[in-house]
Image 1 (cartoon, rainbow, N blue to C red):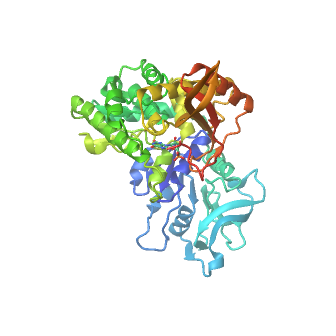
Image 2 (cartoon, rainbow, N blue to C red):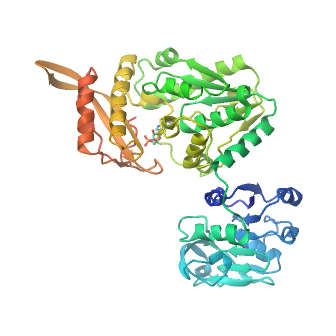
Image 3 (tube, rainbow, N blue to C red):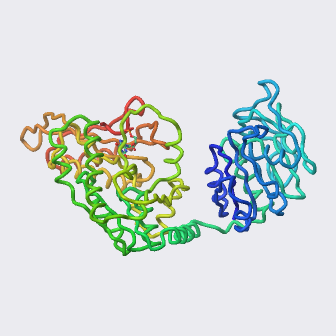
Length: 508
Ligand code: XMP
């Protein structure tokens, strides 16, 4: 185990992820964790994270100096580096003039030490500091310099203490991952044999221990995150878990059945609420996108609440929160472009004592890997993002059951053709939109007056900005021909070639 001691920096979970990428198990612990507790975990190394404070402020986070007497290697990053230097008798001061503060990409020269073994003597690091180490503690030497900072990295190779002023965990630091690997393998003696299967087993054990004989409730949306969370908890505590899957009738073709089928192998309580009539009733006559979202969000809570009442008091409410959600929610309030309704945010309505979020430390690709490890089918694990309000925001204007069915059939054909073309996972998100525009066409010998369907495909990494996907013409051609032939009431197909911005990914 590697213990990452958290001093409040913004990249702390990223450090943990980098360690796991080296196939080494690690846990993030608050810096206030008592030394005895840390010791009991028998760590092979500590990583001290960055943090927003200055070590010379009296109120700044400190460590128990005894941590340096355990014989366990330490890698200090930014604040963590300064803290180590100060605690061991060095001196940290504010950079005198503004040129000596470093932020962003910085050319850095390295001198030999185990941390930089096998790496070039010069490369770019990512700095973010206003303080620097003015005097080294005894036993240390500087082993990286930049134009403005003589102590870009420090090392006491005898004791295995290393500190870097820059952030090796971010991608902008060219060989950051190699440095972390060097610390883990060469300094701490880790072997790199840990994997997602181990993560799964330790998570299951942790959930079992925490939940005991308690009851857990989870709102399952059918998306990747809540599905993997549900599978993990089901594996841990079986029928102590109740999953409420609200089928609002706004899902894609066969999706509800697929989700249900995926959970058959566990003995959890799987409650599928057929709420289509309720939702469509509430949505009748509504055309305004934000009102649709609001209605669906509220109705969702009400349906969930009704089910929760039947179950009575539970001990835990489980959520599929993943690490990017954790970062995003801490990132201040960006302007609301669309009021995204997610299945989170329910707790006010359910009687429970604590929330559990077993995926909180994982990134999306790790969640997918965990899902596979748990034996969830590939169609679920690789599912593209799907908006909480579902097809309601892909049927433009008024929603009816008939329009939803038309859209479902067309969308299924588009998905099938992309899959056949081997593009299912290279286009980030793709779907059909039923516009409320009708136009004239000719089929056989007769005039038609039917709906225009839009196809949308985008490539993106973060869904905040996106480009339209260059889907090959012949794939679009086959899709178009099939939809017009196989799906009644559609006589025209268009492909959306706007990026985001200025458009958004969804049409409503
Ligand atoms: P937009 O349309 O804002 O979509 O470019 C960005 C991403 O968010 C998804 N999306 C939603 N997800 N509730 C959700 O849970 C919503 O109301 C919602 N609206 C859009 C969209 O599918 C895309 O992945």
